[in-house]
Image 1: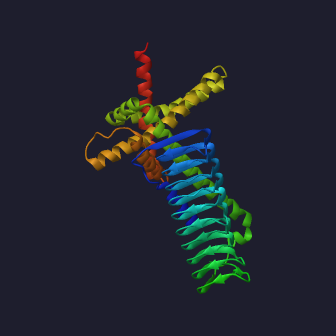
Image 2: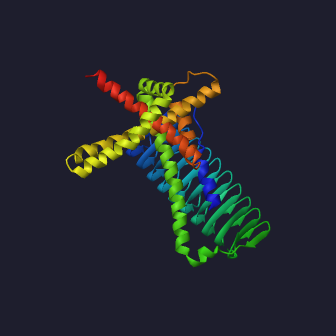
Image 3: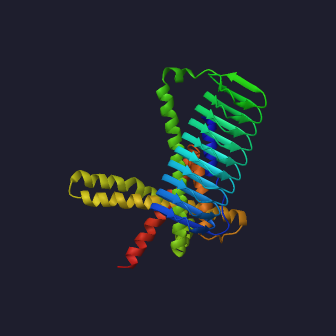
Length: 384
């Protein structure tokens, strides 16, 4: 599972585009077969269907994702059920519950999930790395196959080597391995008659963890929770990315005002944000207990939640502005979508660092939250 965590963490290191980008969100998104997106496409929705052409990277997060159209560069997906059948010019990266891969990939394939099925006819020009509960590889890779899983079946063609750690491994009668087979696990592989292995076969016995023997159901739950956590982290990252890009594109002037004001009054806004975050919930709970102000308390909680979400997004934007200023050694970087892309990625990386990272994120969010409160108050006071 360490490999699964390592593979999934690579999804956080997404490339930044210098050219055009399209951001879409909502309950569902459908790119029709005859439609073309020029530049990168970023989508966050419950249901996503990409039947058209994406001339750049395609990055999508949601419940059900289906990709049948071509993507000229990288394809990155995370969700519950994922079907990726379109041709991809470069790498394919997927994290999900149930994953089906087809088509041709010009680069590598990295997939982590509960069930992974690489269909017959799928062609991966470089290496393949798969980590999951049940893994079926029936496609063709011109590189190596690195696999980690419980039930693994290799039915297709691997022109390089197969390496991995598996509980049960089966090579089907039509399996072709151009290199060697090297694996470890509690059971020797089942190699069916007709399977071809050009190189050596190296098996290392590795006993099950005692906890796995005593409670396999706990092991399954742990795997599910790890996969769920990693998937949620990526969904959160993509959601923040999408929100940051949209806010800076739609409210360019106000975004710059907010970031600049937070920078100039960081200490004051931090204290204000901390005070409001600590005291407001107490006040709302008291209103709820009295019964008289239940509606007011509900509205207060809803408003505070919305402001916290906006503050988290703008904390990423501000981090991106500060990083760009640091690199350029001057203070004129705008709060635009490029700052949002850079800053949200840095903020997400901070979120996975225990204690120090969490504290840094909390400080940034509270400072921006305080600035939002002051801006809202100033707007209300001046509009009287």
